[in-house]
Image 1: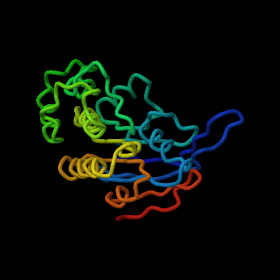
Image 2: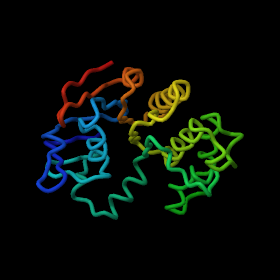
Image 3: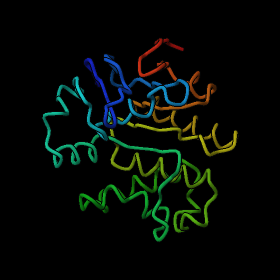
Length: 222
């Protein structure tokens, strides 16, 4: 479970407040979309709740642990073990094959052998079995994004955070990604929090949080 208590985030000097006193709870297994206009604070909120960025004030709790009390080393280990991240651009390493990219999180913990079979399973599940030895430059945008999702899932994380994962894709590939996320949520029980401008994507999630000027304007179940 992820719980935010009175979270505020400011940037710059003099400080400009981006998030205003946000409190919310996301239960294990929920599929939540964060929507709102550009500049409403969606990505900042995603980064703060995932511990990729520090809050200015307030508390972020995940699985009963307060993230601000962890050292940077402990935070890094926690993220690598419990979280997966997907962004608008895939950020695959160009010199590595699709399979090698998927196994990058496992490489950090010297557990590539233990996770290779699951990495292969993910690539097959995402219809990429024939592309496992190709490098990113040999893949289409949709294929590369599917590899990035497989990489995010390689360590079987409890939480998947996504920032505009379909933003650079055409409608067909966007639907493929939406279906993969839904499958991960339904079959694996993965908690997914996704920033999106895509209303079709947002409506496909179980719960939608709309932000406006750094505050949650409304929370509705779909």
